[in-house]
Amino acid sequence: MSEREQFRKVSVDWHRLLHFPSAWTSNVVEPNIQRRMDAEQEAAELRRQRQMREVDVEMQLKRFYGRDDVEFRGMQREGLQAIIEGRPYVLIIMRTGGGKSLMFMLPSAASTDGVTIVIVPIIALRQDLWERGMEKGIPCAEWDGERPPYYARMVFVTPESAVSVAFGRFIDEKKAAHQLERIVVDECHMILESTPKWRPKMRELRQIATKGVQVVYLTATLPPSNEPAFFEAIGVPPQEISIIRESTVRPNIAYSVVPYTREDEDEEVRRLVKEKLAQYPEPGQIIVYCRRIEQARRLAIVLQCNVYHRTVGDKATKAGILRRLTGQSERVFTATNALGLGIDAPTIRAVIHIGICSQVKQYGQESGRAGRDGEASEAIIMRAQWTDRSGRVKKETGWNVEQAMKAYLAGEECRRVALDGYIDGRVGSEGGKTTQIRANKYGFRGRKRRISESNRGRGSRP
Image (cartoon, rainbow, N blue to C red; front, side, top):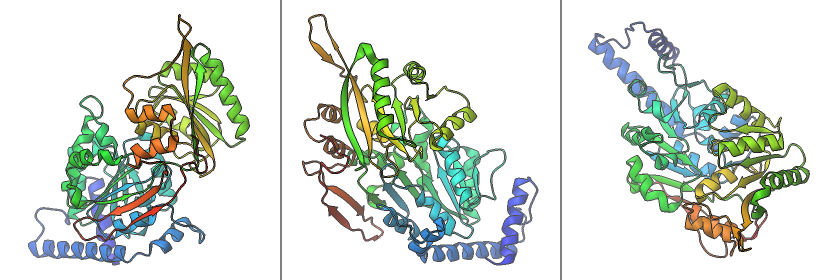
């Protein structure tokens, strides 16, 4: 971009920020000047697209991290290649901790003046991504409807704000200026979880597919059986979307279900947490997931630890608790499912659930908090049991539990196979790992590969 173009871009953005009229955006601009401006902006966009397609992702990765020994993990390279080649719709399914944020951080860092919009449904995750982007030298901002961040190259926004009139105007302005490169929907599986009573605006995100820019959908939790419903929800035909899917089950996590006496819950939890703290020395951490806020509060007192739930405090209070988790300054936390998506705490060694999860994909997300650094870790379900009046031992069965979760609890086959069968659509005793790229109608040539992996490999438990 020439010095003149840079000055014009900054001048327009400052005029917009301060609500001053600008000759560049006025409706009374002389037609020849307007045509020349449009031509220059379009040329700048085409130049940026050409530069993006020529990016050496291996070299850009080393530059991004400032190290020569860094390498791509899993399907990161394939995902980035689909993005920088300009595929119109890209769906990337990667395991928890697989580095999904690199899918928009690296292209933003490689771009000269393009804008990436990232729709993030979790408050804590938006703050974390903002900090990481700023650390990498990318001008970032969280959306503020009263002061639109025209200066930012990466804008984080909630789903609810993303479908607002004000943000729609911001998108249109950036697109008209040929600056908008892509829109990213993080944790996109939550679109399917939206209901008329819970985050209904998420269903309106289907309108972003009509904006005429690249849309990238990221998640760790989209079973193949849910794909048709997802494509319908986002308004994109399956033949028009490039799909990059890797195994999402974590091979370094040992899965187990342990019984405990319901009447002795406090003592049983205390004993297990003490055992795991001894097994995993500092900085190893433990999360104890509870079904109710009252239970989380009570066990936090029993364990003398931090507690996290939806009503624990305001945004600053929640951020402070999460910093103690991600900063490894505290070792034990109790929480409800409010502590879920996108928390980047690498040294969690044990995730303990008190009681049965009804959905496999929820359990996959929450158990995936463990072992994000690749070290051996555990995911444990504590299943209550008691003796009835006739002397028979009863086991907790839960409520509205999916059949796949029942199979996991039964443990008649390796629990990793039960998870794989639902989350990744893989069945059979071999537990093979499949990673694949599916081509779309735009001619993106995909490849499919199969790697043998024992179902009782490292960290696996029957």
